[in-house]
Image (tube, rainbow, N blue to C red):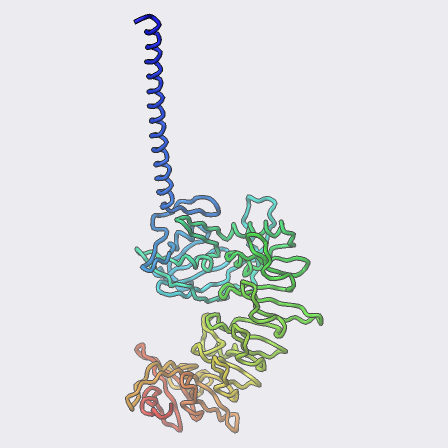
Amino acid sequence: MSEFDRVTLQKEVEKEKKKKSLLIGMGVCIVIIVLLTFFVMYYKRVDATTFKLYINGQQAKCSSDFYIKDKNGKIYIKAKELASLTGWTYQNGEYGSFTEDTNSGYFQNDYEVASFSVGSNTLKKYIQVSNSILNKDDDDKDSETITFTAANPNGTLESSKLSLPIISSNNQVYIPLESVPDICCSKITFDNNKMIIYDQAYLISLAQTVAAENGYTTLSGVYENIRALAYGMCVVEKDGVYGVVTLNNAEQVLGFKYSDILFQQNVKEFFVKATGNDGGETVGVVDYTGSSIISPKSYEKISILSDELGLYVVEKNNRYGVLDRQGDIIVHAEYDSIGLSETEIDKFILTSEDNTYMLFDNTIIVEKDAKWGLFNLEGKCVLDPVYIALGYNIVNDVNAVKDSENVLTIEGKDIEMSDGTTRTVQAIVIQYKGNTEENIYYGLYDAVSEKLIVPCVCDRIYSITKNGETLYYMEYNGNLYEFVSYMAANPGIF
C-alpha cells in the first residue's frame, strides 16, 4: 500500500470516528432533551396537583387540612386558620355566649364580629366600629387615611343565611368556601389547586388606589360600604354625589346621582338616597348588579324587615308600610308604625336577635291610632287594628298569681285534639278595651289558622314555669283553663 493510500485510509478512519462521535453526541443530546422534557412535564403535572395558597399575592404556608371537601364535593376552609391568615382573631363559642364550645365560634377584628355554629347556615354579624380605627396600610405613604364610621350603632345585629351550613372535622370548625366574603369580608378564588385570598386591609388599599387613579373624590368611609369590596364593588364619591364602581377596572355599576348609598351585606343590596328637584329626599333599593328593586322615588326611609323573607319597612309622610323584594306592596304605607313598640319590647324582654317587626316569622304587626292589628305575608289584614295592645303584662296585674310570667305568644306546638286530629298552634295574646278604662279583656289569635281561637273575654292570660315545663293559663269569669287541655277538648274552635 502506497503512502498516499495509507494517508487516505487514515483520513477515512478519522472521518468515520468523528461521524460516530457526532452521532453519539446527538443521541446523548436527544436523550437529555427527552429526559428534561419528561421531568418538566412531570414537575408541571405534580405542580398542577399541588395545592398552593396565596394571601394578597404572596404564597403562604398552610396546614395540610386547610381545606377539605364534603361528600358532595363542596369545599370548606378551616375557620381558625383562615382568621389568622386574614387579620382576624378567632374564638370558640358563639359571640356573647361566654363558652368554649368547639362546635361554634366567631371572627372578630377592629370593625365587626361574625358568629356561627356547626350544623347551622345562619351567620350573625355585630357592628363593632370605633371612630378612631384607621386604614392600616402603613407601607403606602401616599395612601389616604380613612377614619371609618358605621351607619348603624355598635352592637347592631345583622342576620343572614349562608349558602351551606357550617361543618366540623377533626374537632375543627370549617366554613363554606363561597361564604368567605360574607364572614371575613375577603375576596377568594380557587381554581386548579390554586387558592387566592385578598384580605380586607388589602382590598381597602386597592380601593383607595382605584378611587385616586380614576378621579373620584374619595372612597366611602362608611364601614358598611367597605364590606362591598369583598364582592368586587367600591362605593365612591364624585362632585358631592355617590356611585358604585367595580374594584378591578372601575366600571360603573351605579351612576353618580345619589346623595347617599349604604351597602347591606346580608342581602347584597344597596340602599340609595336621591334628592329630588324640590329638595326632598327619597330612598330605594338596588341590588349589586345595578338592577333596581325599589325605585328611589316614592319613599323617604327604608329598612330591612326580614332579609330571609325579602321584606322592607318603608316610610312616606310619617306613615309606614311593607314592601317585598320585587317592590310589591304587602302593607300600604298608612300606619303609624310597623312592629312592636319599645314598651312592648321591654315588657316581654325581647333580645336584639328577635325580629320585633313580626311574630312567628309569618305575621306582621301594624299600629294605627294606638290600636294594633296583624297582616300575613301575602298582604292580607288578618286582624283589624282595633286592639289596644299585644301580650299580657303581669307587672300591671295587681292580682297576679304567684310565679306567673308575662305572655306575648304561645308556641303550642302539636296538640292532640279530642277528635283524634293534631293541630299546630302559634297563638298571639291580644288586648281589647271594653266600655270603660277598667274593662280590659284578653284573647288569642292563631297565626296558623289565621283566626281568633279565644275571643277577647279572658280576664288574664299568663304562664307558670315549674321543673322546666311552661304551662299557659286563661282565666274567665273566675274559672281557670290550662291552654293545651282547653284546645285539645275543643277542636271545633279551629
